[in-house]
Image 1 (cartoon, helix red, strand yellow):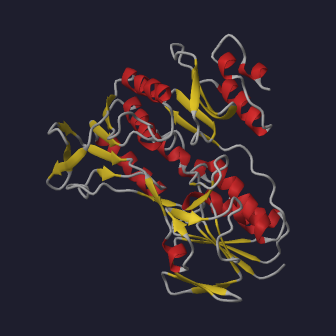
Image 2 (image 1 turned 90 degrees about the vertical axis):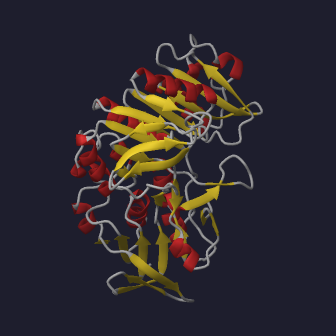
Image 3 (image 1 turned 135 degrees about the vertical axis):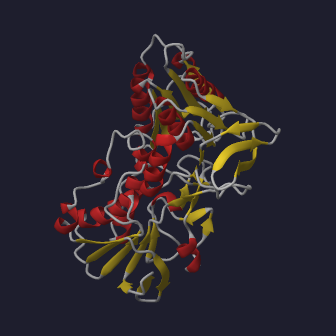
Length: 408
């Protein structure tokens, strides 16, 4: 098979797609286009090791630079794709410098962008988001001189930043509008355990707290809550979620429901346009008829690998068990499966030893688990889900019994 496959987006999903095409024997041109300068890099460490100064940008590179020449992958970095057209036989994209590229097949791996708070003061200096390496470098520089750090949003990114800043000796306040942190992704026992851990480190965690204004003249100096409370802040980080980047998909009239609608192998409604990674929504793995966006390295790799097979007309391999992790200082949260759609859960442990596991069920079937500081439980659940097995919920509450022995 010859021709040209253009991949817009040079992150984890885009690079994986390019490499998988070569692994499967594609011999035509593979062009990987990214709007950031430099080589493709890992994003998860930006809020952890990179922000803490433990990892460099070179450490974050997804692959050795030699891989691009070896695999004949043409990397066009630091260029934005402004427009795309897809005709009956071929397509063409236009870069921000006016250059054009003709292609036979297009893959969108455009990722997502950080949401911003629509409140007064959101554009002040010292108000930051964290989505790419430029954001991380800016935040690193700001934290050096900061004393009072406020994180708006009690999701994974916000809590990881909070843990890193607190470890640097900063006064840290996390502000969450919902009734508990991580409310959209974990059960209440996990939220409570994670909250307790952060508070034990000296972080202030506020819930049911809306933010109405960021104060300051040129630079942020404070955060005003809905109840009128004012909190001092040298740096404010907003971690209130991300929006899939779908503008190019919309210009092609592809279906978009928050993200670009695909099947589990990245196929869109157009036979020669595929989409992979954080910019997509795909069929829910356990709830028929529901679409879900899965933001994880695991999903980016698996969906891109499947898309490469689909592009080349091969039968994609079955997808594995979705998994995700969040390192917040010494607290390590691992998630296996998708808990969305569960009808009950069981709690394993009380967290007094730092460990806690919550297993999610629909009917009598295990569908997911959230595990804190207990890799054995995580591996047991992940292996059970991979085999289509389950774990007796009543027996699982006994922490004296190894979870892997209960798989059936």
